[in-house]
Length: 296
Image 1 (cartoon, rainbow, N blue to C red):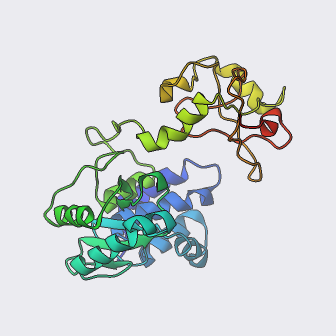
Image 2 (image 1 turned 90 degrees about the horizontal axis):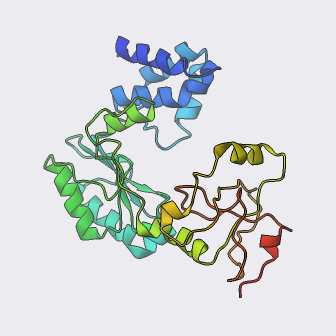
């Protein structure tokens, strides 16, 4: 069955955002998923036609990422993290309880088509383990009992408020947002601040006066810092004792984390440390003064 003309119009809106049409493929796949509930053969054909790709090229991308479903998903995609931390703290028990209650296994949808259950390798929220998401919204620190109540609410037509983030929406609505179309519901962008576990590392770094080294003089990063002014104070995000204005410095993947600093170390110069709203301390480059410091 061909997709609607409205979907094709929106697909072309997505393509217009990019200098190269094929760059639009990922959001376009979310768009067709919003209409079909999965990446259907018709959706693959539309993407291929609009982007000048072969169906094989589109299919290769659609089957690589787990967020693109190969069968119709329910209104509520319930993902249970069963990776190491969540698994040890109860994720496996949560998944088993939901499997028994819903009568489905991994990547299966209930007979009424409303709930799809999956176990996830990681939901990037280890500090709130065990974690469950519904259509990618977080329900933190769950137990088998609380997760069961969550699913029962969904089955009863209720939309329980996530622990943090935007109000819960359906899988189709979430897919449309992932395609780059705004969520126009009241309060959709009025999510609360980061929780305590998220900011714990930043607070500890501020208390220890840990910083990252500044950008090299004349580098693009240094120029960006100089142009941004003094409004990026990390203390505004974490409520710690005031320090000099500071910002995140990108670090290479092989740079060791700097977790030590002298209690009496000087405040960081402008152009180093934590960004406004940042939840993490940045890595010290090997050989830098910060990398050589010893914890007192």
